[in-house]
Amino acid sequence: MVISSDYEEKRLTSSQIETLRQVLIQKKRDLNFKSRYSEEFHIDINERSDEIDFANADAVNSEQIRFRNRETFFEKKIDEALLRIENNEYDLCEECNGPIGYLRLQARPTANLCIVCKEDAERDEVNTYFSKNNRHRGKMLSYLSSDLRD
Image (cartoon, rainbow, N blue to C red):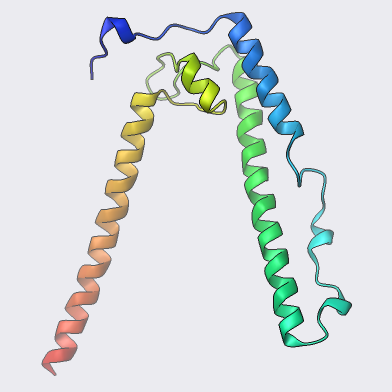
């Protein structure tokens, strides 16, 4: 794909990179579950006096663990972005090695692909999902049709 010259992105300035680095550091500080340990997510004997209480406590713990896992994943992406800043690769696309662009990095400071490569990756992901899904449904339909014949 050819991008017109009036849209061409340039490498970020050092002040832009420093601004984004500070945003990443602040996002890392704002993580809620960062300092919590897995022991906090056990179900206390007092919370399981009956099956409903146990199910409720289990649901709450499952939700907290899910949020913690999301934040752990996000923290890893922040650390990777900070490492790319140190290596002077922060504003370069990992796929095409072209500049990512300041506006994209402002919107998503952990982005590691330019918008063109990200759109291609999402398109491939959707196509892969639908081809797997269609093959699965095709097998299901063939099983159903054979059952109806019997």
